[in-house]
Length: 314
Image (cartoon, rainbow, N blue to C red):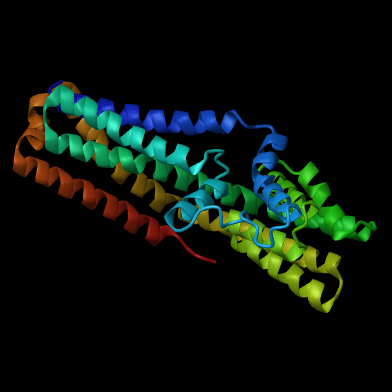
């Protein structure tokens, strides 16, 4: 298979390793109590520090790390990936260094090994970003029904926190999990407004921001909260319906982009299998390597442009 064969095998192995590592970490902490335990640990440490007489707690939400580490920690929380920051960094190093070193040993091609290392370095962030996006989509699909349930609970005489607790028990992940985390924060002493802001920061959903803004205004000026939640839930449901229609209308463009994006990789795999010497020039020759790099960048740019064309914001 020449050199191009190991390149493809190493790239696939790195992708599968990153995906398997994240799935293993996710499945190892499925229990809700353990995830809430991890999330509430900063609050307990803050309480312990206050009880010891220190007026400046060392721990608070969002201040455990700073700068880039804080942003990574936030992304892990938004994706509900139960990894610490150092574990995630170790994963990125592993998916980048291991394939690159193996390829360097097998092919003695330093330039190709560097390219594979850079690709391996990008695999975990791509998987993390896709998980974050899919989690937000799933949350938005559940939010309309959850708000209707909360409105009915308020009409039945429940309080706002009782309605949230009911939703956390009745709704599946991700909405049920996030509501349970919010209830846990409130029981640990965080105000309702702050807990809702933390919820908005974890989920990063426009529909949720709309709900939290309306609830915050209602708690300040008063009004019928049940009716307000009913209207917001109806609005979110209608927006989700319209987005479904838009996805149906743009399906042809998205499928065309998928086919065009996958075609070069399918063709490359075919040539590697049946005529490796033909495609090996792209790896062995400096000009071929340059053309391969330009082609990959153009491919990525084309996929991004097609996604922008078929994406319609509401």
